[in-house]
Image (cartoon, rainbow, N blue to C red; front, side, top):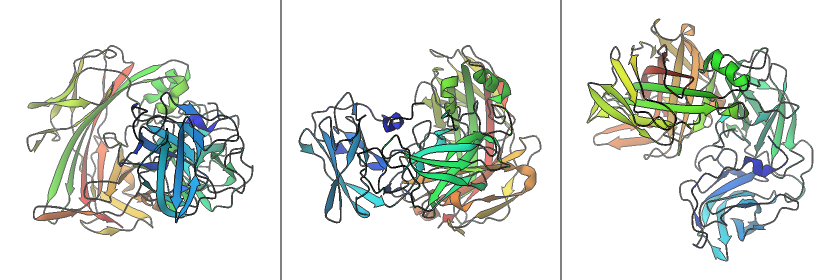
Length: 542
């Protein structure tokens, strides 16, 4: 990775639009950190002084896009400019990239704190104002998938990227790349000063905190921050969570790969053979299918059962091994803003690249999975008002075959889990400012030896904004603690009413994954299918 220029972290997320229309800033997620894209309204979503931020919409700039690569950086780029107004003071933003559907800019360190508005002007036409909240600091690591979650942009001391085939080891120094540490004393349009910024941060890694040796701007790049820390002892896994706490809140959670020795880690669902194949310089084509059933108590006498199926077919190569992202390692928790990524799941964040054609799940009835991209599929598994998944039944998942993956059929013999919470009750209040101790009973020895604990909290009745978390722990432990810093990024739970019922928009659930079943298809090195039956309860994260 070339880390000399901040635009290396740019993600062009939206389709092209006409450059002749009046600029329109998106109403969904108008202004956000360029590292986390955190939805406004979620804890930690404010834009920090001196940080790189993104604006999304249409007609914001030229097509093709243009970027600034020399100092001093401009306040006008490709005919685009951005003004931020807080408390009657208007500050021109410093532009890094301008495109028809996205602008990346640096918020000057002199911008006043507080709530205000932002406007975009392109070709002398100015957009309607959109809201912005300016804060002193809210650090967010950049993510490999350019969506704010998954594998972090983290390098060793030689600036080699960390992935499952180039791991860190305990006591190694990590360079974590992000934005949002806070203001500097000089001009943000010039090469930044080197030195620690006086902001109070805590680097959480796994269930430990890390000692830091630097927290400040990367000397190369305006708005781009580095945090240098050492991996604590006892940390290990392909997907170890990392979160940087500022002001009591963690903006976004990413992961790094850590092993006690060697160059690769061992707990990816890809399995050692495919990880070694990737480490040996070869591509890996992998199929992953998962069926999930959740039975949650969400009211005094009301239960909701949700059944879901998903599949990804991914091509991974050594240069992009950071895309091999699957959940979180055992003993840890992960969290993400899924307000606008809610067709994905925390337990599979891999890229979808391989077309397998039409895909469907069958037991008594057949339900097609919606194909969202070349190799990303999901759907609720329901026929009318009847859910499809019940433990002990065989479910056939069949693909018609597409341009990259041949036809196949695989049967998943489902097994219900019996694990349940023993210390959580419907409707209880759970503080987001302290650790949450979880206890459970039961469990099925025929299933995997881990439990998966998941949950979400939504701030509005329309489930917007919403943040999820997921934890993995040994079944035999019977208990687990969800760290406060994971819960800090959840919004307070709203209440939703449907007819005579009302229930909280905070849920938590627990289950065991089934032992995976392998399948083969032309175009794949390997494929697996698994299932998860969970029980849960509605509560209020406060």
